[in-house]
View 1 (spheres, rainbow, N blue to C red):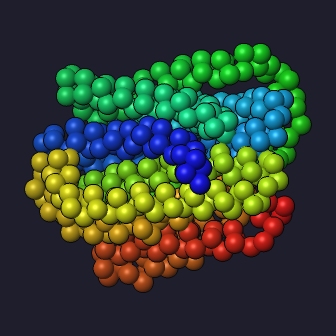
View 2 (view 1 turned 60 degrees about the vertical axis):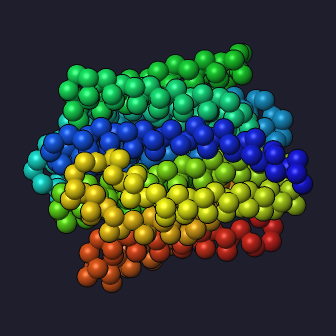
Length: 430
């Protein structure tokens, strides 16, 4: 048992440490922009980043599907399938990136119009979005490379990718925003440069693991229908998830610049929680995917139980962190008294969220490893349209508290519905 706990942590801890650099990057963006004189800069980064994140995370199926398929092929010891899934997913990533670049103007204008933000915030958001979107090819291919490495239970590679990309991004943030005074555009360009640097490292890492990779053989290998079906289901799941977070940002913008800026600060707290818990979920993806590839349902249940124990431990640590130090962290992120005061009013939701949300992160990892895209899609549709929006509608009178209540209920339903599907017998063989 002790050895198995070490195995979970050997997979999870490098991913947790590297994943934490992602929200830390968001915290640095917020801190750097939040110390500028105009709150519209912070609101602009929040809205612009939400728009581009919506598009990139909407296409997050590239990593998820790749991880599950690679983990199962790895469990079977099928080297040809490893190369085939990598090649197909990489080709799909490049095609989708080209589509984003071609459609960037109408997508950006539609998003800014839907945001409902003030004119000044919209102007800053546009600067951010139209610079940041040029990182799309690197971002999407990086998702595939990350999925490949995680699926093979390779923790050093993903850690190197995420730490390099986000550390470089933080350094460039300080140089371009603070040093050169490029403000919002500087924050966006820092991300683009870091994305392409990460791509270079990722391609080198994958080449070392597949030195004889043949693109033609990979693209010609059977399996396109399965990949497209899985990606479709995870795409719809990701759309619903991002729809909820975009809605929170846009509704906050309608409540005023102070509220959207405060929510931007608090959502970075949530990102910190999610990326840490995703480290455990990545371990669950690799371990359960391997168990599914081997057809071993007993092993799958065993690894889920161990991963669940560690998810709970990390969730409790975040409750303590934000409960005791939350207001101090807010003060580090912005000098604006009104934003600090507004964020402090809603801090309690962030303190409670880890215990509510840990289950949906854990079971996301389980279902990704098992490549159960349809179940994930159905769970997310129910949680979004059956819980999130109805709760928000009924709680509108609570203002921003209503938004956070809807988010909490949404997270709870995701975990509950996936748990109900998971507990059914024959999970591996269905």
